[in-house]
Each structure stands twice: as structure tokens, then as C-alpha cells.
Length: 626
Figure 1 (cartoon, rainbow, N blue to C red):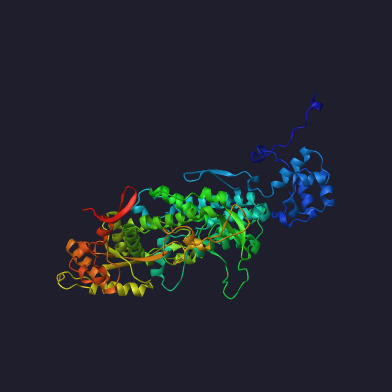
Figure 2 (figure 1 turned 90 degrees about the vertical axis):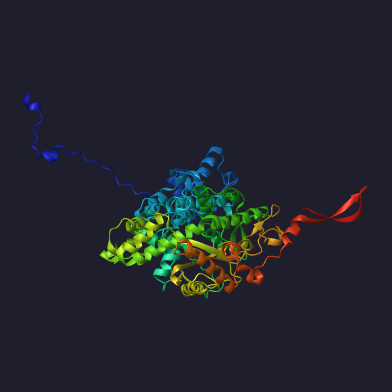
């Protein structure tokens, strides 16, 4: 019996005793085709058939010399013609082939968005979202200081970016389904979605306040915009998270597609001056020019970025949104215009597009340029300027940066968000005392007071030097008989010049939109303003000048308002709306400000009408309604 026993193995160490046997996995090399199937030759097309289990049709495809480009036009009738007789086989082939240009071939992740509902995003987009550089956008409010006026405006750049990435995919896929002849590839769709997702990576604390107010004052020698920072942050995001191999796994071709993504965000990466008629972009050829109009449309401003912030901002501000992007998606179509392919819409939609730009203008007037929101951002900017050199942020290679220099280093810039407000507010540092006091005044609602608003007759060139000279003029614009015991200095005034337009300065953006008719959807046409309505704007841009006073006691404010009215008179600006109330002794002195008494009442209360007697016009009677 003992001979039948298995000999005992030598005792092993405790570590080895409890080791789990390793499972052997044979290495299988997965064939990874060039994701742009339009580049495939016959051999690669046959490789794809084998991969999808359709190898029995390989000889037919090879004999008919069907390339990747031919797959896009393959129909049931074509397959039957080349000898594939069974309907089930033809349907199977068409199903497998169509996977090549449908982005939803891979399982997507679902987000529940309050604006767009349940949003599906591609796995590659999730890889980008789950990075520190993108998650940073959670801590940057979409509307900056507007949140201190509209309590609902607490939404951030993170959710807006998700929305733009989603809408970019919706528009490009709508075009792909309606016009397969555009040859939009899965690569194109992914790149457009990534550009939409990453277009705002470069925003700083309090969004547009940072690049529109703080940086120009902190570093007046540079011309810095958040779009440029978005490109640098995107490069840093890709490299820091080792995403190049992941992008290639999902079919992107590098560096070509990285360049295409960045061109969609900020336009041509190299200056196109001197290139003449040469196509300025490198990421995609001229026959795919329409792809550059989806995320940031430089031609007319109609893009998915606006669609999302219209809907999202209106929702959080409590303002009605009159533009429905879903309707635009239904009518969007690509037509050829002057040798390029542009996104066009139906001719009957021209009125809706004017409504879209009117909505933009209303949002600026009612929310983005709100007089209290603007002065809060001005005060935050002042606090940041005083704190600038005292805030230390560690960047790459252990170097230290300040608030204004962090834009030069993406490691440092990734750490810079709206939280710097609380950092200053809650600090006990003596160096931050002045900045802290300004922010405490914002929290306690001790704000600078608005003296009024006016408009210049002609556009003004706005520079820091010009603004300082206007503040000095305000201090010296003392009306005769004014209060002599109030001493107003230039530093007591704040002048804000606001540019209001339809997105293209003084130009009408609709002049750069092309339309098509139901009768011929391939031909693009232009629709002039006078073909639409006489009630549309005559001008598409204006400047508003707001003046604030830092001193808030009643006596000083009363004197400052008279200084403001006198300054408007001297500069030949428009009469402030409350000018007759705050300075009734001054406004009659300017002839162009005098009302034509009785003119309005004559028009509204008096009518000349014809009296009909037995159906015949007998006489004209002057009716006066008093």
C-alpha cells in the first residue's frame, strides 16, 4: 500500500504555499486596420471581411477590386449583381460594412444632462474626461461673476464642455446620415467630438473675466486668449496621461488628427497671411471644409458651442431661450460655395437664425453684461491684481508661478481655478490684506455704485491709457454750482466700455450664411436682410459706456452723478436715461438732448382719418384724443 502512495513533496515556504497558479494566456495579435477605411486598398478590405467572419466572400470582393472607398457606396443591389444571391448574406455584409462609419459601434457611457437628457459619449472621450486637466473645469464657473447676481448660474465649464462634445457629434452624424457622399469617416466624427469636448480647456478663474479683464491689466504687453491656452492644455493633457497610444487604438492617425482637433478649436495653427488662395488648414483637406464649421464657426458664428451655452445659460439664468438647435439639425445640409463645402440650412429658417442672434444679444444685455455682475468682476480683478505677486503656484520642474504667470506653465495652470477667490478671502496673510478686503466687500455687498450708462456717437478705440484719461476727465468735469466740499479724484471712478454685437462686430452674420431651397437642395443661395423683414436691426454693433464710483456715501454719489452727466455733455455722448432726474439743471443746456415737446404725444394721441358717409369718403376729420 505504501508503494501506491504519492511521494511527499519537499516543504515549501509559506509564500509559495499559497500562490495561485498562473493562467497561461496565448498571445493573440489582434489585427488593427487603418481606421480611415477610405484609405484601404483591396487587400485591407479583404482583411476586414476575414475579421468580421465574411471570408467566404473575399474572392468576389477581390475579383471586383472593391476598395475601402467603394464600401461607402455598396448597396444591396450591387451585392446581388456581383453574385451574392441570398438576401440574408447581403444584409449581413451591409450590416458589417456600415459599422465602419457609425461611431456607435463601440459601447458608450451615458451621462444624464439637464439640458440634453441622456447623453452617450464614446470611450475615447471618457478617457479624456477622466484626467486632472479636464476635471479642473468642474471648478470654473461658466458665467464667472454673474453667479453673484443670478443665484441659479452655478453651472460650470465641465458640463458645458460635455454638452458641446455631444452636440458636435450630433451635427456631424446628422450630416453623415443625410449625405453619405461627404465620405465622413469615424475618425472625422471622433476628432470633431474631441474638439467640442476640449474647446474650453484653457479658461482661467471666473472664465472670461480672467482673459478679458485680469490678464490685460496684469500683463499688458501680451495678447493672450483662452483659445491659445486650450491648445497648450490639450497637448499637456494628451502627453501627461499617455493618451497617444489610446487614440491610435481607437483609430486616430497621429499627429495629423491632433492637428485637426486643435485647428477646430483655434483656427489655422500657422498664420495664413500671404498664402492667398491656399487652403490654410493641415488636418483635413479642402473637400472637408465643413468640418471646421461645427465647433467654432469662424465664417458666421453658428456653431454647437453657442447652441449649448444658449440652452444651458438660459436654463440656469431663468431666461427664455427662443432658439431650438434640434430644428437646425433637421435642416442642416452641406453645399458647395465658392469652391468650399459649407454647412447650409433651408431658406425658410432665415428668420429663426435672426432670432438666434437676437437671443445672444438679449443674454448679453440681461445677464452677461449686467451692471452689477460687471462691477463685481471688476472688483474681483482688482483683488487678483493686488494678490498677484503673493499667490505662489508650483509648476513644472519645481518652478514657482503667480496668478498672472501660471498661464505660461500648464502644470501650474491646471491648479488655478475659481478656488483662488476663497484662498484669498480666507487667508490671514498680511500681504493679501488689501485683496482680502475687496473680496469681503463683495461678500457683504458693499459694491461700487453705477452712476449711469451712455453711448458714443462713433466707435471708440479702447486702451488702458484711454480709460485712465476718461477717469481723469470725469474727476475734472465739475458742473458750475456743483458741490465744492466733495473731492473726487480719477481713482474714484471706474469706466467700463462694453462692445455689444451679433458676434461679428459691425457685420451682419447672416450675410455669411448660405441657404438652399426645397426645389434644389444642392444649390446654395444668399438671402439679404431686405428680403426678410423691415423690422430687423439697421446696425449690428454698438458700444456702451458705464461709469461707477468707488465712494458710496450719498453726498459723494450725488456729486459724482452730476460729474458723469457733465462729462457726457462734453464728450457729445448720448443722454443717460436718468439724466433728467440726476441732473435736471444740466440736461436742458445741451440742445441735442432737448426733447421735441409734444412730438410723441401728437403721434400717439392725434390721428387724421377719413369719415365715411353711406360708404363714400366725404371729408377728412382731425381727431384729437386727450
